[in-house]
Length: 170
Image 1 (cartoon, rainbow, N blue to C red):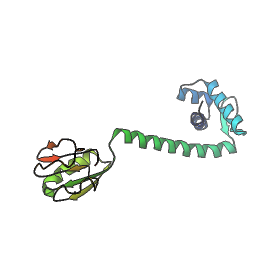
Image 2 (image 1 turned 120 degrees about the horizontal axis):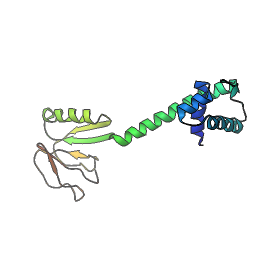
Image 3 (image 1 turned 90 degrees about the vertical axis):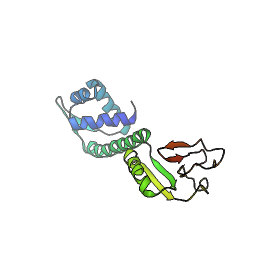
Image 4 (image 1 turned 90 degrees about the horizontal axis):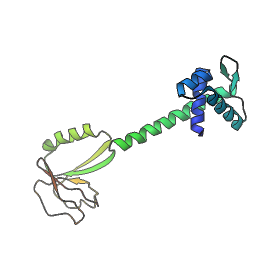
């Protein structure tokens, strides 16, 4: 079994103070739990539990290891949550330049922010398409359709009255 899995078994056994209850909680056999703990003790060269026929008690070393294992498992869970969430919802920074009045675009931006809270908007209010590639703008609005910015820009698409284009170089 992997180290993290073994440490997780150790934490459960320390919390329940009973290998049979730990086994039931984890869907394993009691002997698998006992063997996992024994291998961990052998690998570390210390005794983690005082064993009796009815329960197990942590040794001083076991108490110290339990604190460390809880921190490690908590950190791993936070990392998993962060990256699992990242895979599900768009996040990062989006640079946008708009030429239309802010009163017109503000309701759309509010909807966007509610729908994608992990995206940080970097708004720029401009007067034209000059310098969009150099500024690494990913989305632009022009009040009237204008010439293409480059051959790498996809065909403009219309969202209500907004003419936008997103390209490979943005």
